Length: 267
Image (cartoon, rainbow, N blue to C red; front, side, top):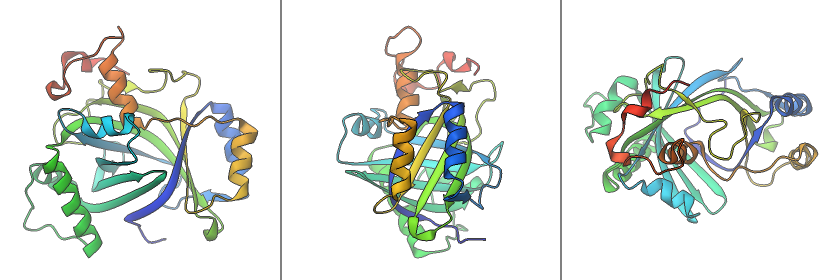
């Protein structure tokens, strides 16, 4: 089994595709990609996103700031179990950097209170620096849990290591207001992200194409062949904006007052 990475530097492009396009992509990429051995057959992941009461991280993304960050905690399984990954994602112009610190799930509430459990042991100095950076940003922006996002993901990686390509397929993408410092959502509160805002219901799969340096020629040929259009917004921004607008097109309640009553709407 390959080593679990905690730092990434790469380009990332997102596309909403139909089921037919997703199937065609899998067929066309078969000569180049293999299923990621961390996700044989796919797995569900859930992410808890943090932001300030003024949604500073989201606003930087919406404004297209050339240097912007994002805080989230991710776990795997349904329901989420095992370790939790505290992540700092930073985008500088077109390059995305992601650093992770792996912690026990039960320590997440204390960490989100700014407390370091005395028995917390990280494997590397890099993870310790990531945890320190995560907590620094959290306290500087007074960031608190805002929204949960979940999806079923299939992940594929390059057969040829030099290509450095990763392709993921996210299906059943849903969100709901955060329920405090927990990655466990209300099973009846999930709202499907597909079909919200300007995203068509038939394009139900979000694919992410990720690569280091220069993308292999076959990736651009695939994008052109399937006529894929880049999605400018992240799942987090889409979820926040969708909730704020609401079904009547009006701005919703203040983010600091989440979860409001309407969050009990089923998916």
